[in-house]
Image 1 (cartoon, rainbow, N blue to C red):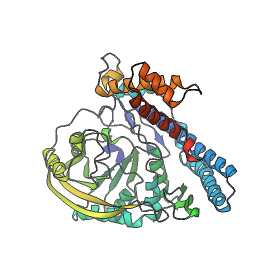
Image 2 (cartoon, helix red, strand yellow):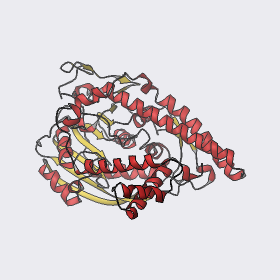
Image 3 (cartoon, one colour):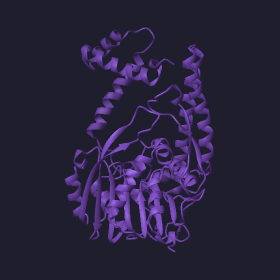
Length: 447
């Protein structure tokens, strides 16, 4: 039997852990509800997710208030039935999530300085609910999608039975679960940084169904606006499956520990450039180990040079120590909830690569630059900062002109007088700004 903890390394210094503690860094990595928190700064990460949970609760309460206000203003019987169901769904969802995310209430307080010390923090664009639909797909209605992904991965393994499997960006963990249940692997490790997905899936795979409400994007019927789902696994997961909360960009594992690394819908989603992420994957594999990437290769990168085509991706992987690279393309259903009109087919590619040599490793991932962290370097005067400074000054001036008496045309004339811009351009700019403010307040949505 493989000892799970023997695979682990400190995400701060890369040294082996002893009983989930790093002696060198003097850090004890906590376990909450059976799941180890292996972020570089676990207390800071827990505080961050606790705060995002509080924000999610506030948004859920706001949604409920809007529906309640709409109920008061409507008299149509059909509309009232739909709105009351939506209101009930929000109320019950809050109860379900509060029970599920109880471990976040045990967080140890940590301020921003602890994040800054290691230049790490979860991506700001990722909220607790960002991939909540994956829970329903994985454990309720998405059997066709689940099977298509599982079949692609197992076909790419070409009959190999890896002893140690790592799934990076495991999400709601259905793929990791299916692989562990079907193969002879001694150990499967699923890593993700989202506590909602991890805690829900942990309950589910251990034979404890989870109740959550789904709110389809485009409900087919009125009664589909809020649906109570019972999320469950076919069978409890067998021994040897381990879930980890951590950052794949600082994966908390010793080098060369895994026979197979699976990256489902992951490599093109992470914020780091492929030229850095692929060597990190190489590091996790032993020589001859297999990397399988599954997804659409729709790289979400600001730098257009990092939005790789398939040939570029294969070429880069070769330069990063991989060989025998094969790619198979297929069209599969994606997030096709049966109760929603929203769904699509996705062209995905399954890439199989074998580690031939070690790859040169980039520096540890840093989410924040030194000029933010230590405050001792000049803040760079980038083009985006200059543009934002001009926009901010103009917006602040526009706000100062709003007195309940001036018209849009009056305000545009004053911008021209101040030589900030010509009146024709100012009129358009002010109108656009006010439209944004109006929409953000929700005034245009009939509340």
